[in-house]
Image (cartoon, rainbow, N blue to C red; front, side):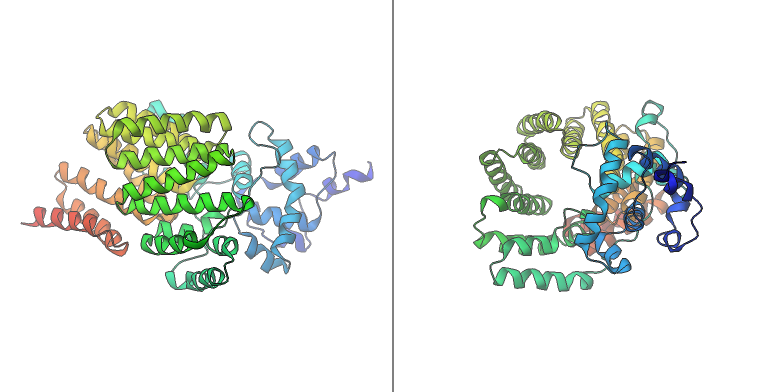
Length: 436
């Protein structure tokens, strides 16, 4: 046998330290088969031990800083070690990747989807699929592994917030931005923690400070657009819809100036959502449809999924319930493929709530239970609260009052924690109504 195949001979029964590092990967995946497929893409040549370690760590969803700490290397070195594995993954899945655009989340999603060994933690086990028309679209296993997130409490992120303010004091706005927003590991960044746990006022304070004096250079325009978009989302969630529209319009203007097609599409989709919040359905439809068209042209699946979700919400409000369910399922399919657990949670809850409006309570409960479970494990408190509230409404309609009260109480606690006072009041009113 030629010497270039020696790495293949060594797999899969390595007994050295390499096999000990991140060994959980063997419990989750058909790792040997995956590695051999990578070798075939590389003409039979294997990866270096460090490249293998880093790829295993990504597959079990460790962020770069934790990998660097465990291997006693820098995060930039981790990035360099992932370069070759990512090139091979792109070669292995040419129809599902864009050359040079591989990310940790995408790599893990591709490995999990094609080489998964087990899925005991699948949220699809929580409730059964009742809508056979969409069985193919509800493959939630792709996002279902329960993971530990970096941040658990607001106290843990406070040092990063302090660091953010220090950078602003020295007018180093780009470093301030990346202190709380991580493009490589979004799920574990400070911004996502604040957003998911409902610390919306903190987000507004941070990003308003960032934009008040920042005059971005051309190379900083993407970061500035993202700042405006995050600020717009925060205001929209707080009910300041007109303010949100102003920020989204600024995003659109800057994106057009620098010919950033992705952010043009994303800004249009965000405007559609804000106009939906204002119940201006004509504008909401126009912006969402145009955003959908541009997202599809640019190949941005995330914005495409968001646009489809917008259309589902609009048609639900217009009482076109079956059409709304169709759009939600289209969005769900993309979010599942993108390995977006929070997005999947939102779609499941939206579908369940729409079935509630159709008074199809069996489907309602199934989708809402699965959505609540997905929201809980992905730490999205607002989605989880919305799921409990809608489940309580369904249980109340079925006259299951004890279970409904329990669900309202769970929603109340989450809304109160997020300082969503009006939502918390609605829960308390419902509980009072049923206990009179």
